[in-house]
Image 1 (cartoon, rainbow, N blue to C red):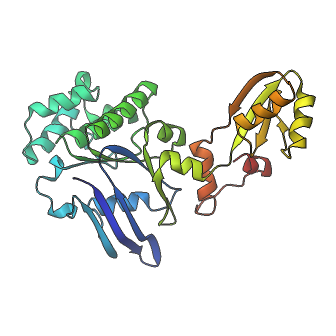
Image 2 (image 1 turned 45 degrees about the horizontal axis):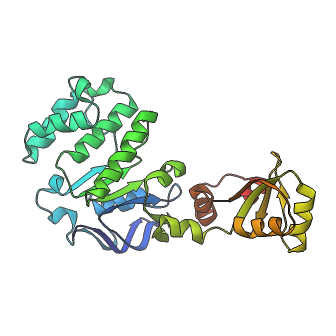
Length: 311
């Protein structure tokens, strides 16, 4: 079994502690979202896992071994940390051919990843002519070149158009279904919620959460229901008698915090109040994430009381 295992990992840069006694595991067969505010330590942690920085203390291993001790590393671990790292004067094809030759990978594999990432038609173009989205695709192609068991991607959707975002989402899900270990760092909450099965959340270099997506959302939210009726005053009075506090929205619907749709439906049925709409209010990843990391961001913007209450 190939997994990423981080144990008591610490990294200091002078007096600044970027990663603070961090421990977690990333297992195969699922997409793990790696979240945290700017300065939370995500990029530093990924660099430590890949042996690009040395930890002050603690360990980071892949399949039980440090990255530097892995034979044929590109065939075991594929990573995208910086899409701008490729030399601009090379063509996309020559960039991948150099990587393949230096890692004992057949040249035929280059054509396959160019096709898989949608770059086959531009493989002969110089990288400096590429858009940001095309550079992202090239970085992903390099990560996939050795058909690795472990894939680590930092902001893979950056610069991609809508078609590209759907493509990378399905690519990550497909790799997880194949049993690979997939770790993805992202700031896009809506996008992360569409592909991640599990979440690891950092704040100021420390672990804030390590949970399946559903459990994370449930742990950070309260029950709530949304209802619409043609007899709002009757339903409101009935809910108040049951000690609920319905709040009317601008669109005419009512939100009842602390109640489920089933509970609201029973109150309406008992009073013979007709309902036009009734649903549970589902928490979003953005709301849950902001609630957890509100005090863990180095650069927090001022938020209005109303907006903070919504979150």
